[in-house]
Length: 165
Image (cartoon, rainbow, N blue to C red; front, side, top):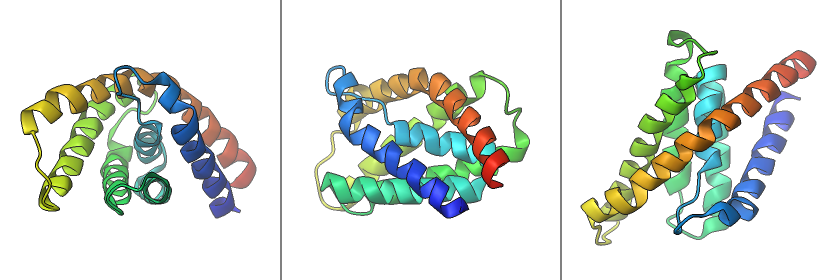
């Protein structure tokens, strides 16, 4: 039952990410709600859940995007694992936790993506990518982190109570 609940949740999340989130784009930059939820899952539920949500969500993103296959899977899975390592070391009710975690996660996500693109042989304008893509995405993710973290925390409490997740 646990796998079905998380699978449906991640599928819904990817559907929202690919259909509704592009409507929120400002200058071509949009929040990565899958990254935000992956970090929240890692921080609240631990590394296993963070890795699972990051892997499944990233895989679905890769299948739908047509970009370098495996890129989103690897980055989201890695970030979910790293966020999960902090699960027992942080005060989970602190509202600044998702904001601080999104600074690190967004920077790491942008860095990993650009490194993999570079390693595949594509030219990367490092300073331009950082200033025009990674930093604005980080700010957008930070703004989205507070409400999404609160929504995920409420969802997790209900799912854990009803389905023993």
